[in-house]
Amino acid sequence: MKRLLAAAITPVLALGLTLSATPAHAAGVSDKDFVSVATVAKSYPALKDGMREITALPNVQAATSCKKSATLKVKAGKSAAYGSTDTSAPIIGVNVAQMKTVKLAKRVVKGNRILSKCKSITEDGVTTTVKPLKAPKLGQERVALTATVEQGGTKVVLDLYTFRQKGRLVEMSVIYFGTTPQRAKSLALAKKVYKTGL
Picture (cartoon, helix red, strand yellow):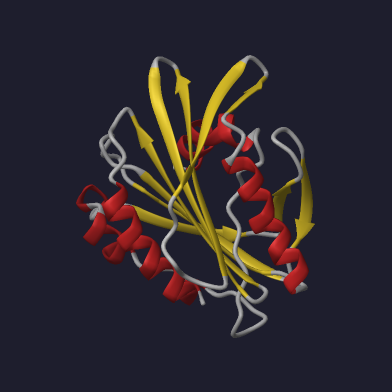
């Protein structure tokens, strides 16, 4: 699962599209801040027999340009990946991070807003197209984008939603492999992810 996720998002990680999030209600982040596999499966049934893996998130990235980013240390953070052996299923990523200050949380949102306007970025011979998406009205700030890249003859699409409430960031990504993005389902899931992440 880890290798699959890493291989899928390597091209977009080169752009600094690392998921991140920050809690407004508390200084800590726990496993309870992440939705269950059953909740994810309500939007994406192919993930009903999938798995959730939660790991520590010590840092997040804040883009400063289309090709550069700054590494920001979080006060507390965790990352969750939801996946399945079903190749038609997308991979869902959720990061929840408590930043040390509201200013730092704003930098992450600003960075993803910069990325959403980059249009086309080439790194190490790999070209990724980037476009802004409409984000649901959640939190004090929000931004969404979609990044598309060809990987081994397969079209890989990553949709990224970032929300900020005070110093807390909640971010969700959906990675599709050769399938059409289902954004209505993503928006419904993003609302649950945001509510749980706070």
